Length: 111
Length: 113
Image (cartoon, rainbow over all chains, first blue to last red; front, side, top):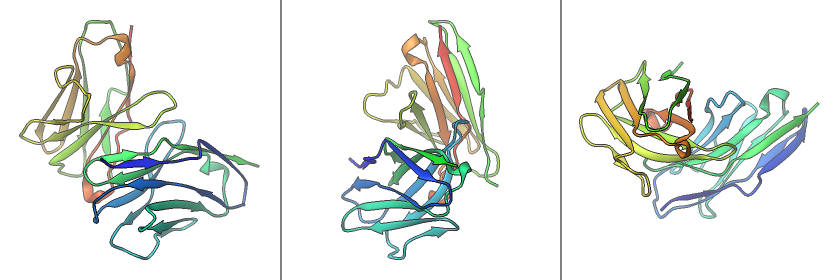
């Protein structure tokens, strides 16, 4: 079974600074997708970024980028130039069939 | 943008009654939809996979007779919590399966009193 581990229950960053959220996963499959989702207090799940496992190039979406290390089964999220609106729960997710989520990291952004 | 509509957003029901939650994919024909449960301050846990025109597939530990899933059309999946009890109180979220960028509904907060 696939498992996703987020070892940082909480993280804090100063506005305009950079923060990295960690995620590791376990799978025996070779083809899969990885995601980072953001869940604000409204609890709506918002897709932040996704990575196809067969692509070696790290995905980037504006201020958000990932460091995907397939051999190490690591998938960290870097948020650059952090903004107050980035404050939320962040979930790392593995998708083979249905999403498997990590426990989440609560990100606080300090003004 | 992609839209998945979930209804109701909040529901309070008495213990022993049944509650139906609807999940509609408004701009995508979803042969498969997924149902998740989220406890307070916890992560989302996949409950079941809803398959259009066939039986749902349940995750281990999820009671299929308690959580009835129907996926009668390509745009609608329903989750019925039968004979609800206080321990069924939770946040339930659905998603479609578009292009491995699943779009999630806004969730349903169920409170059983």
